[in-house]
Length: 154
Image (cartoon, rainbow, N blue to C red; front, side, top):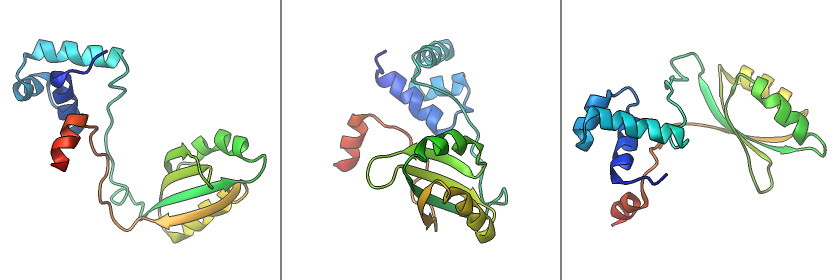
C-alpha cells in the first residue's frame, strides 16, 4: 500500500493523539469522516497501523527508576534468555542487537533494591551493563516522511 500525503497526515494525527475522532482528523487533514475511517481501515489491513495504546507514567505508577540494560549473553544462554524475557514484568522493551552485546532492554523499577534483584536475575544469562535514565529528551517521537525530515534540516 502506498502512503500518500493524506495518509501521512492521518498518521501524524493518530501518533499525536490516537483518541481523536475520525471527524476531528478529517477536519485537520481536509477530508470527510467516512474517508478517514476508510483510509485508517486500509492502513490497519496493510499492517501500517498496528495498534493503539495508552501511555502510562512509570514515575506516577510507582516506578522510581527507569534504566537501559544491555546483556552480553554467555555461550548457550541467549536462547534461554529469549524464552524467559517476556516473563520479566520490569521490561518495557527488549531488542536483539548487533555489536558486543546481544540484548538492549528498557526497564522500569521501583527503586535501587528492585534494580539489584533484577540484575541478579539477569546475570545468570550473561554480563550486564546498566544505565540509569536521568531524564527523557525524546520519547515516542512520531514517524515522519522523508520530506518532513528534509524540511526540518533546512
